Image (cartoon, rainbow, N blue to C red; front, side, top):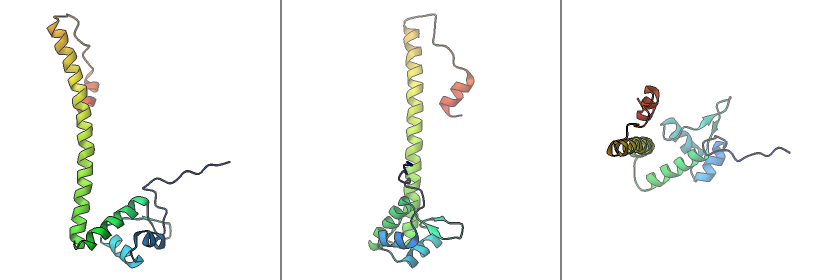
Length: 135
């Protein structure tokens, strides 16, 4: 028996009529949002739109913002800034992990120097140091 998993949030599976029903928006509104770049649904071989759960949430956000009186250009800018914030948060997490690694190496070295041990931690190869520093 083959078990089928639930598609991921970015897998485009919903046709435009289902996406319209799930968001409470008219299909023509979805086409307009696609045309101006507020949402980018996947496409079938024949060119039909397929929306993912991520697209549905994006459409709901657009609907909420426009209902609050924000124009489409303002909505586009808000979504763009939210994407930038998400990317920066991800990069910040990566940098924090690198800092933690470097602190651990530094602390080991300081302890060894304080104890005047002749056997300092092994010097890492340049490729390891480059990887840790992201160079």
